[in-house]
Length: 405
Image 1 (cartoon, one colour):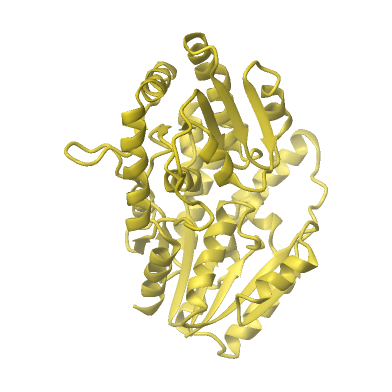
Image 2 (cartoon, rainbow, N blue to C red):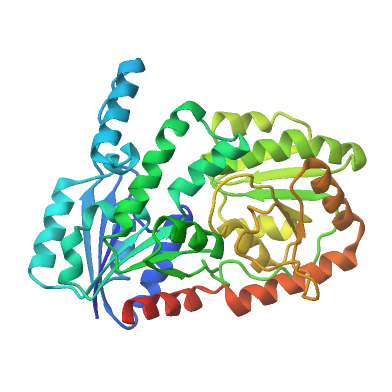
């Protein structure tokens, strides 16, 4: 099959973030059996060596420059202008920011020429390039949503974690309308968890919606050779992501201080690229270290005692949780951090400890600090789950099935 894959985010190397990791690994699997053309965009930080590296994984790589961000009109008038455009056009400003007319023209010409049998949008932001009439000339039109932007915005408002709550309240019904409209252009929708499937079904009841979780590169995240014991905590993730920033602050300011009173030797590592000023400031607190980008996330996971995933917002399966599980570090996580995973059902193997309130996190982490047998139990169960259900090969097989149905 000739497949055209669209990704405004350049997916190489697959260590830049969750979107890139998922896109690259699906390409890596599909190119074994199909002819894959990737159309993507290049921001200023993408190197020529990375372009060459991506070329090795596709039959054809077409790269357009990422559109330069236009200067936004300041003040209230600028906000009213952007809201008015959203209200009139039905497309969020964040989607329009990445839109390239040149990329659109290339795609249109290739579809008209009949080069491809299927088109996929790797993240919903790329839906803007797919025209409704593509369904009449393509076998499959697929949008790999990752997670609902309407659902994520609503969740941030409900949990009080929205960066700009007044703006988001205004945008919420428009985001709902936007997702309802773009879903009609696709033969199939792909999400990462049952919860996201339920959300999208409410927005687009007639759509074919498939759940395909993320996976883990087991060579990049090997099982740790030993339990280091001690009192070391770790939280991992891109440190410029809103949901991760909220989680890191919640962990550092509302969980870690009380835990450190109970365990004075406790330490906390915040490990991830692009830490914002708010994240860097957390490193000034006793026992907390902010690392920035590191060569090997697995190395830091191997050296810590417990991984904490205190997410309060952000739908979809969490790569950070899967990657930590693959290494065998015991995990304490929130409902959001464990979304899509079966970890503590009655009668089943215990694979993580669940917590949502600060005192619940403190208690669960303390249990693991004090009980090496419990750490060992979780460690083995986690790794077994990843090996069985959360490899990129399995995700690739499921994605191929959607394209082939």
